Length: 54
Image (cartoon, rainbow, N blue to C red; front, side, top):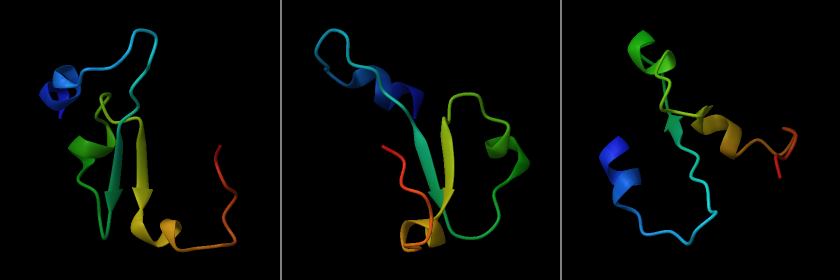
């Protein structure tokens, strides 16, 4: 994923945040990965009661 983010051609001043959307368990190596900013269970995408993040 690091190579994919590095390959993006973005305007100056634009930041990239990485996310892993998962269904099931997440391996400890991924949970501790410093390169992934957000780890989101797929159920949260469909749960209307969750607080929306701007």
